[in-house]
Length: 168
Length: 432
Image 1 (tube, one colour):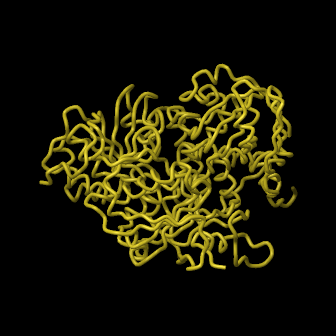
Image 2 (cartoon, chains in turn green, blue; image 1 turned 45 degrees about the vertical axis):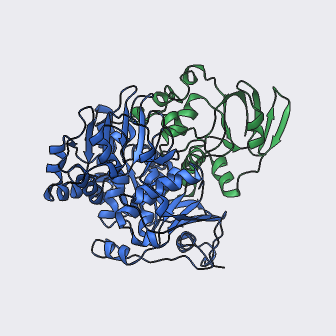
């Protein structure tokens, strides 16, 4: 899985109330959620985001609520991948489960400025900053997680593993 | 090698592919059988849609893995705050009826999920539990492994009764000394989060122990484990003791099992606190880790006080607040909103005469709902407004306008602040 896009950069502890405020949680429609993505931290995001853009953030990205609306809104907005120093654990699970690519890579985060163009190879765990001409490598996901990612998310994996019934 | 209580519970629930698993190590990925799962009106609609998508794909109806081990609790935007919320709740109701899910809690039986399920005896010592709500970590107070997940995990668990976990490292938090007056579980957990930060326990298990924890009521223990997620923790957990067993013995809907950490269990860190140095705490905007003693707050005028939620909406919390408010009027510029967390707590508080105290002080009493905690309804803040709240998060815009402010505190600090109209240490209030 490879992605190329321009970056949006944020700091520590970007929380799910900022990613998708609770006032929009009376729906789970991805399109509606995407229109308000990152609204309380960066009002320019939803308007300015282009397909395949990459979010880069520092520590504990996605902390707070378990709302899957947060990664759903980011994915639907067109973000190809999130790179952070660390992710809050529920956000981490949710992203993998819905097939939103994420990567922990401190070195790459440190050097990125907003607008840099990155090329990410998820299976190899590598990041190439084309703007700064720098290359980074992070550790790959454990085998089981890679299995989930390559299946296209948890439900696709579940679907494959469901026992067949007679006549199926 | 010794194991922690969290490791033991996860080892006991690990899906045994090649014989029994007697030992798990931090970092290992396992699949575990689940004793109980839950979702609410915000998270379950996505899970139900995913469940239905699989049914459509397979061209057949699927059953949930166990009709008595799934709870669907419409508590966030209920009583339905608008048409869209009503539609989301209807999804839970229709799905529960269709799949014969035993524990769907309608208005009138409903409560804030993490206050409700322990009270109903549905989450028990030794359980392995996931819930599509970040505060599912609350049940660790009863000696269960319990953690928050998202909607997709809930959907998969409704079908398979299993979830994947990375075995977390554990941090041991030891509390010693004598508690100061008015200091309760909320102050201890706020102080701890202030010490280690909002990612201080990221991916890790927080094990709370020591004489002070043994002395705490179950209500305070639930408050402490409830906020493990605010330090990034995977779960909060307290070894079951006499108090735990007394709490569950008459309400347990299933068998349960007691696990305790081995003396030689491995910890990533051990932190000790002398609680005699801890005063009533307040977490200032906009992080739960931004804590200081209430007494150090510099004349911070407030507009609203909320007492309730999965963190502090239990009977004991309401009793403490009533003890302070009795015979006092709240400040004329303050709105006091009290939300008993469940129907049972609501009835008990009314019978005990607490409602009279709240009403005479100038407060209002709401039906159980998560509403104001996440800026949903029943107390949304305007631009520039400040609220002292017994809830669990004070992120930017959490309770309303992006330029409003939330100060997290115990029921005692919240009640004292309502009287004075500014952040107040309960010591300042004359008890009548």
